[in-house]
Image (cartoon, rainbow, N blue to C red; front, side, top):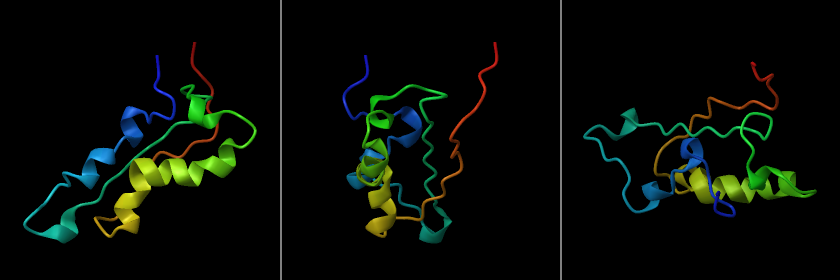
Amino acid sequence: MERPGAARWGGQLEGVRDDPVVLQQANKLVYSPHDYPNSLYPNSRFEGPNFKDNLPNVFREHWGFIYEQGIAPIFTRRVRHQAARQP
């Protein structure tokens, strides 16, 4: 069972707060979170009448802080709003 408010593996970068990757050449690191909508992978944080209003804070908590705190750039590569499931 999913923890309330839990991020999925692709968007769970909270560990970066306490243990970021440190390279000798810092400008070579980019974090790339990806979150999927309920049409691909049901998750309680993408439900309810106000879920769209809550997403900025959810993303900030799980990975947005990386950019906001100047830890590293963020590259969001998997943003999909709908996809057909294959049988």
